[in-house]
Image 1 (cartoon, rainbow, N blue to C red):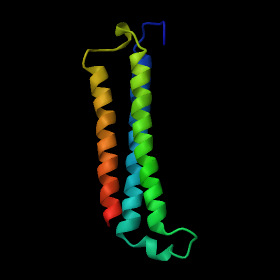
Image 2: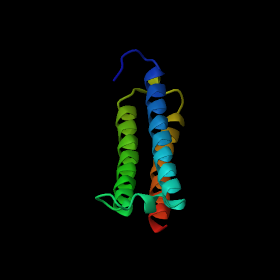
Image 3: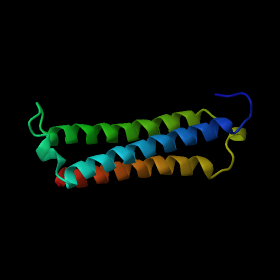
Length: 114
């Protein structure tokens, strides 16, 4: 990917994945607040029910978590060994992506059961 033998590409990929994880958690938290405090009763006059919108948003967030992790994996697989700061750095980044998928899926199941 880069011919600079520079770890900045790795660090940029890591920052991007962490930004996606932060965004996913924020969306899930907003959905939880909406469901927990009954904002769906005020919005029930819309074309779609709030439950349908919540389902769609939860599935989109899970899809984003999978895509962000896949993008990080593909980018990191193209890097040379001189561009990765340590041996454990690549598995830790991918582990954080996998954990974000689990968190988004688990919280979506909790939100949908409310």
